[in-house]
Image (cartoon, rainbow, N blue to C red):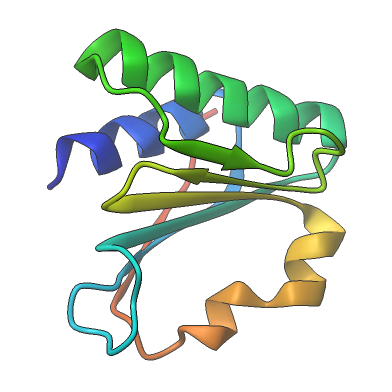
Length: 116
């Protein structure tokens, strides 16, 4: 497994992100990256905390900085671009509205959950 992907998943679990999935985009036509990681949280505060946790852990463990972050101002949907791995942290209602999982439903999917 890609080290950035693995670190992102662990950081999301650490902040209790919900419904964590990794979509393998490597064989998808038109894909902009190798992996989409998608999760959600019930509050904008937790969305921001998950995104901050991902950014901190990836930089601390791998020395890799996020290339671009969008959505941090309102924390309804934060997208983080690590070139090969794009992380989407949604507020629960926004995830249901945009249905990004369904848009790329043909991609092989791995589901993860945090351990309580």
